[in-house]
Every structure is written in C-alpha cells, then in structure tokens.
Image (tube, rainbow, N blue to C red; front, side, top):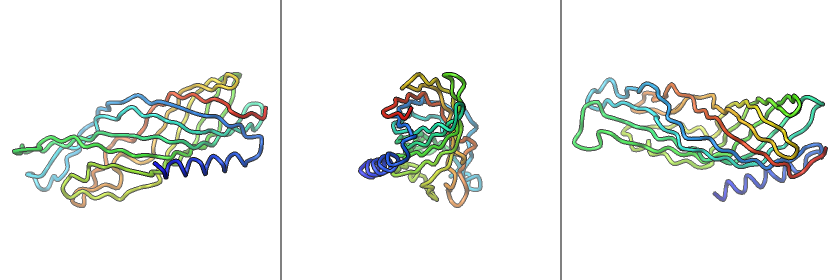
Length: 219
C-alpha cells in the first residue's frame, strides 16, 4: 500500500506542474460484479487422472479512485490523461474430471492492486462527450491462489496494456458517465500448468460507472 501511495503522490505532483491549461478532476467509479459464462478449459489432457476443468466464473465488484487531467484542444475536441488506483479480483474454479478423496472441486482467488494510466481523445457535442483511448495497468501487488495447482507457472506481466471508450455528460464542474474498459490480453495469459498454457478465451473487461469533479479550472 505504501508503494501505491508514493506512486500516486509522485504522479499528482508531476501533473500539477504542467501548463495551466490542464484542468484537474477527482474521479471515482464502480464496476458491478459479473458472472461470465464461457466454456471450461480442459487441463492435463495427456494425463487423465490429473485432468481437470478450469474456468473463471466470477469477478468481484471493482472500485476506482484517482485524478484526471483535461486539456481543451478546440471548441469540440479535448484530451485527457489520468492516474488511478483499483483492485480487481477474479475467482477461478478447477474441478478434477476423475473424482478424488478430497479437493475434487476448488475455488481459487486471484487479486491485483493496480495503478492505471489512461490516455483519451474526446469529442464534445453540447454537454455530451465521447471518449476513447489507451491505458497502461501497472500491477503493484498480487495475490494468486493459482499457485496451489500442481505444476503451475506464471510469467508475470506487471504492465498490462488495454483500451477504453465511453460516453459522459459534462455538467459544469461535474462529469458523469459510462466507460467500457478492456485489456488486450486474455485471462491467464502467460500462465502454464506442466508447461501447457491455461489461457482462457475471456478477455478481462468491465463497464464502469464514473463521476469526476473539477478541483481546478482554466476556463
């Protein structure tokens, strides 16, 4: 947690030193829990006694907090760059195909603390704004119960690129709207069991309900 605070403070001071044309917004958001329904992955096919079904059926509610920096390009277009913190949690399941005396079915938690840096280009139509852009998700801490799987290996990715697009209402000092955020890589990218990839077909993504409040203005 100390690392998260230090990084956030450093980014905050860095952006406050930018040109006065940048407006600073406090931001907060929430993404409801989700229960995706996708096909199970069969792991350890070549060793039937160790074969199991693997999936990610549940993502917990995710909360966001941070700072956004807006700059007007002209009357209709603007750009933003932000920094924020979030924690995301996935619940994975593994179920051995051949029943065992114990632990035939297991639920495994995977959690990441992230610093997000999104960069957007936006277009304004009266009070309606449409934004799209790219993001970097920097992992500062991780809890991974997948290490309980025999033969598990993880090529950890501490910088995860992604993208986002959204629509929002700009009401004076308040901006409120919806944004869809997604990674480029699939779930469990870089993870293996006994040398075989356990990458799932799902790509991490969520709808975020967000609010921003202006704390400075150059208008």
